[in-house]
Image (cartoon, rainbow, N blue to C red; front, top):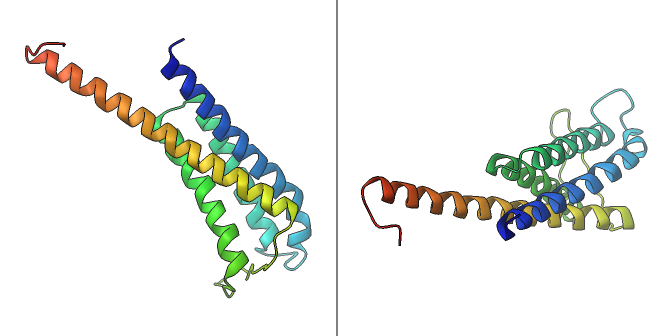
Length: 152
């Protein structure tokens, strides 16, 4: 196995691990946050949606490891991190069916989730960039050879 392939597998595993940590914590926290809106769209429901998206992105990046998979994982991880930070520091009012989720405290589960999402997001961006660079490089070599250019 080439060093490039090993690096991609490490990135894929790291992204998936961060997303799984985020998903598990969101599932664990969801019931307590749903109490404010037991029959509607509450924060608990949103936590379950986030957990599902994180789990799907983790599986996608593990199975495919493509630029699309890394991009999807980055979007899920970084948007979730943005939500944690936004609702920690900004009192966003309820928007339509979405509740106000302002919570001006850091606690252990929230910190672990934020760190996992930041790590997964950064690793996903790195994986995307690594694949983009290697695919762009191989495309230039193939195009150059097709026109009679030297491989050196």
